[in-house]
Image 1 (cartoon, helix red, strand yellow):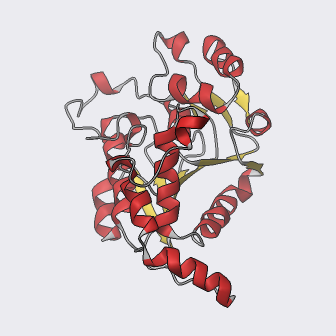
Image 2 (cartoon, helix red, strand yellow; image 1 turned 180 degrees about the horizontal axis):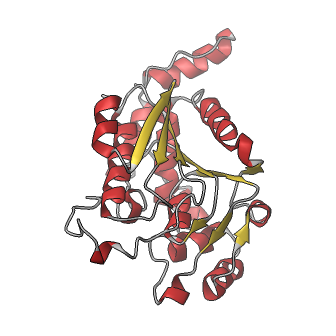
Length: 271
């Protein structure tokens, strides 16, 4: 199955499985500029992760040394294939509006993540970064807005004035600065980046799958609510909490508690 999908995504995305972790590697020459076909490939890869019962965590990486992604492909409108279907539901880059993705996705930033490249990182749940990489949102200097998640997400992740100043000026944010603001979990030497991301991903596979997805589901739905409103959320608060409700009625919830009392590793079944 993964081999067939790799054939369909060839030239844009490559998938590699390592246990319950799926590496989603962007490989569009030369800088992973985001076009419709790359967006569609990214969406298909993320949905494969979501729909595969034996996969639990995704790691988004780049196969290009020059950039994690340089953002929007400005040549697409003039080049061949400009009528190609892009992402169906995932929006720009295939994952910036992919609400169906409830499994966690880690971004491993090996090189500059510029414009839409940074927006792909912001669509992920956790970011690790090479010490030599940086973020940049130069859209205002290109006559555009970073509306693929930059202006929506960044001011909620770091201090508002820091985020908006970055957008106003197009100033780069180094890996060290991103860590200092809490935007990035860790910055490591470039040679250690993939292993660091995979180590985190494998550690996350110890979590109960349903609890993991319920966590992401609830986080998304309480975003913007007051503390008082968020504390009123229950599994029966609406269909948007369907995974939360499944978790509370699951065999895994009982198994996690029983395994703790028995002092043994839990055996998750995802149900």
